[in-house]
Length: 96
Image (cartoon, rainbow, N blue to C red; front, side, top):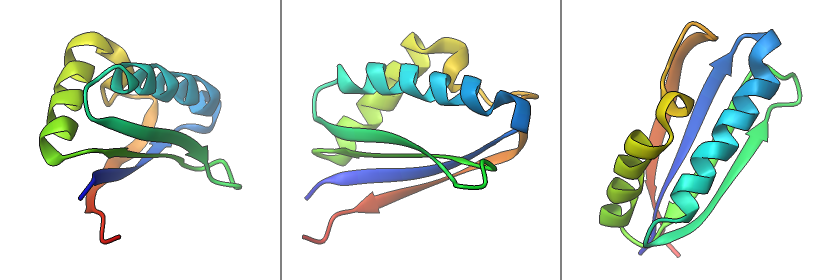
């Protein structure tokens, strides 16, 4: 069973592209971790949210990967004044 996440980020309009770049930097760190399966960065058609999705081979791999993000991605993973509201993050378990 794989373990995934979906996260909604709400950057201010003038920071959407910068935020997309930040999410791609986080994805690079995730992709280098054991158990990584995939991650994608999306933007809503209205441009009001950046949505990231990802999957890992296990919950342990997910936890280890995000610990690495905290160590290696620095400011790219930190909530700050460029966002208009807190992120919404949900974890997921595959059923397939």
